[in-house]
Image 1 (tube, rainbow, N blue to C red):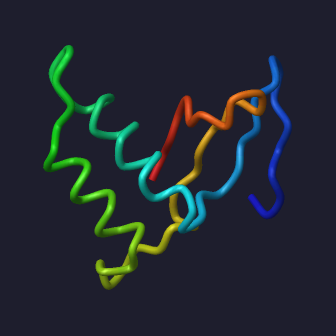
Image 2: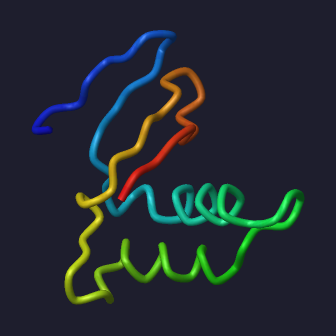
Length: 78
């Protein structure tokens, strides 16, 4: 996918950027944690990958769906 893709209901599918690091780390921690308890290990791993400390992963390897009105990440895929 080269360019961002506008989806229905004001959503935008795009590659993540370094600016998404904290929001994506937080999102992934909540999604992959127990109900009501974010997973700090997932947050740390996502942050590591987004900050290019992993030898084979860069921010653009993540896809995010962003709610355009709020800027919030509502879905992600690595």
